[in-house]
Length: 396
Image 1: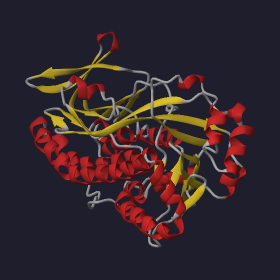
Image 2 (image 1 turned 180 degrees about the vertical axis):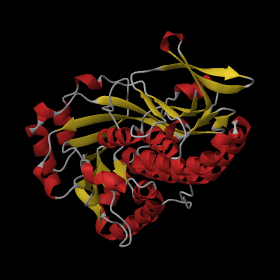
Image 3 (image 1 turned 120 degrees about the vertical axis):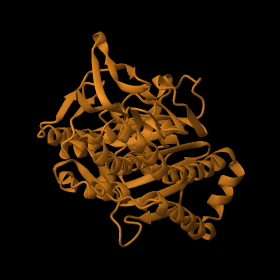
């Protein structure tokens, strides 16, 4: 019997599995997918995420992976630059760095497999949770196979099946939204200077940047999922909402634009992240908005706190394990609440601009006057999103 079963081999599950096996704890990591090449994976490591990896002793791995720092953020409204901020935002911090998440996960799995207490089960969907004596005692796999464990950790993402099976309710903390996610050929300007552009043109809003793997990615805010977006000429639509140099690229690279994928974004938080024998972490416990890439960064900090509490207790038996589960939530929840508030503030401002042609006109018209105060307000919000709200220190 495994001491711990972790369901979901994303950043939460893989890093936690590695830390636990390094402390002599037997872990079985279960993943439904065959590969790590999912449609969308957050790949921006903020200083919080980079600090977490450094504390875990994993920073040297980044040198083996496709990665690249962002050079700047720029906000464009109706073809006029509102403001631009260079990376790093603070002189004493690291720049936001894009890293290939599939490559990162593969390297972490490879490292975990050097420990005798680690077992990885890809292509293995979990069907249900198992119960014994009023607590979760493992998971049921396909073919009526069972995995028993002293603790099951749900790291299976924002649509967590284990969360649903355990009847742990998710409270939506702001209106959700839909994104269309595109990939297309790179542009030389992004190779010279990798800028994350946030673009608002009339009522269209989207972001574009160069991924760590060398192609462009576009997240387009979709207002009406009932519209037949699959039939739209996206190269022309993207071009019509872009500055001239980027519009030219969308048209020239039309043949490389992959069919967009619809991402429905739910932002919420479980009132309770645990029941006896089961702990939710990462997006399973608190689905984050993609704004400023907080999902992966908050997940890595969840892992550090969970490790601090679990390592001393796992070998003490199930009563000791269950006793620390609420303490993990209590330590992590204040930061999650604040970060989601900051994300929602940024989203609300974007929606206000989208919905008001008069406001867009005013901001564009008076951008020379408004640029500095708007930039400073944005920077104030980013400091907490980048540096964290609470202190998180690996103690074991």
